[in-house]
Structures are given as structure tokens and as C-alpha cells.
Length: 268
Image 1 (tube, rainbow, N blue to C red):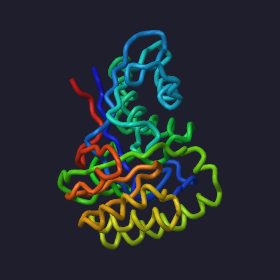
Image 2: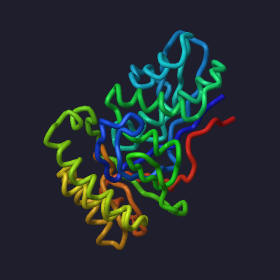
Image 3: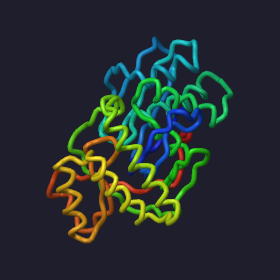
């Protein structure tokens, strides 16, 4: 049995390391591109896009859930370490597939907690799994998860390259800026929970934290000048948004997807 988990693009966030259930707050969009994983009885190997991979986050999920030797085969519909929540998608789809293969009889929430814990332990993400479990435009608060009602709008995204999530999460000055501006953005969004406000606050967050790369800044400005809206994926050197005039195509290969209003699931 295969499992599918959609990708998640974070617009803004703030870390809340003192919270056991939710490791970060913020808002992002879940998209239709994602990870498809199948678990097999095997020798403990992990394959990503048919290539052997160290995949520490996935292996943490495996060791947490099963004493059996299993192989994991994951297909990703997008690049790794570029702000698409690929590690979260891989870990949650692995948990779902393992649960079915091994007859673990664990609940969906229990599997989500296992996947999220693996992300935190390996410093590959902080809030993607929570959003990927729900789908849509997801607002993560300290003690609750909410959504901005949004149709399956077409989302364009362009990847310039990876950013190292562990390095950024280990930078105290970067974390201070993320905490300050991410918390402020969340407070504003809660008072006006709309998609347009989310995009506006995400752009502001990228600029205020100085995480916005020069390439990403130019691409965002080009989309906005053409009548669209865009921002930078957190944490990755990638730009996403509503781009009706295809302004992003001037900067590289553009991928088209859509807001995905469903969470991770088993598939036939």
C-alpha cells in the first residue's frame, strides 16, 4: 500500500521550542505536488527517486515504528532542501505506509507525531508535518491548527537552489529575527485571515528577516509588477505565488501546481 503526502510551503513562522505538541507557529500553503512512499519487507534500505539515500529523517521514523527490516521507496515531485517540506512529506508518508505494512494499528495523529518528532530530531523541519496532515492554507497556533478557506488556486513556483535548514536554525541572530517578525505576522493574520493577507505578510517576513536572496527578491518584484503576488519559501531559495502573467518564467523553469485542500493519506 502506498501513501501520499503533499508538500508544504511555509510563508512565515516562529519557533516555539517549549511546546511539546507544536514546535512552531506560522502559516503556509499545502500544494498538490508531494511524496509517494511504499514500504516493503527488505534489508533496511531507503530509496528516494530510485536512488539509495541516507535519509536520516525517514530512518528515524522507521526505527521509531518498526523493529522489522523494511525498505522504503519514495518518489518526490520536487527538489530537496528548497522550502517545499520534502522531508516532512517523506517522513509522514513513510509512517503511513509502515503502519499499513506492519499492521501497527496506530492512529493518524500518532503517526503524525512520530513524523514530526523525526523532523525535529534531525533538524530538517519544524512545522511542515502539522500542515501536511491538514491540507490547504494552514495557520499553526500554539494550541490549535486552523485554515484559511481557499479554493484550489494555481500556484507557480521556481527553485533557485537549496538553503540549509539546520544552519539557519543554529544561527542565533537569524532565530531572533524569525521569532520577532514571525510572531508579529501571525498576530496580524489572525485578525484578517485571508489568502491575500497571508501573501502580504509572507513577503514582509522574508524582507524583515533578511532571508530573501537577491534572486528571489528580483523574482518576487517581477511577479508583483505584473499584477500577481509572490514570496520566498521558508526555508529555501525558492519563490512561489499567483503568477497570472508568467513573470517567473524570465528567471528559470517554473513548476505549476495548486493549493491542495487535503492532507496525507493512503492510496491504492
